[in-house]
Length: 80
Image 1 (cartoon, rainbow, N blue to C red):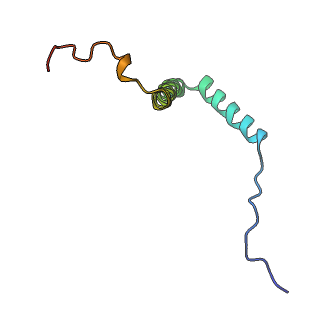
Image 2: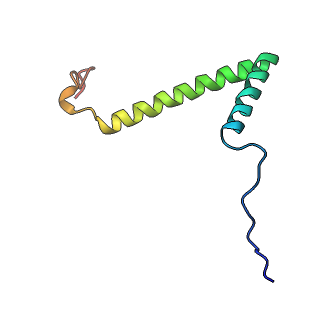
Image 3: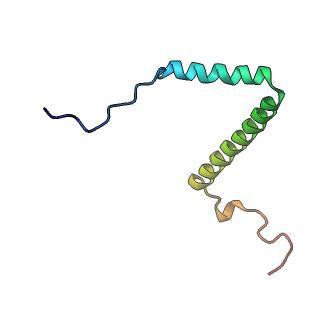
């Protein structure tokens, strides 16, 4: 009799939407209970939003580059 040496998929208690709901509930519980977590969460959200804005600007400039004729004053200090 041969035994399968490959491990099967891990059997978790929660899968998919249930795990997501538990994660959201635990975040909300920590935000309500502890002030330090509120501050950390706020800073994390600010960093995430600014990173998302940087990503949007990066791809916008990658696919819509500034053309030379779009720049009005190429030498603002008058240097040659």
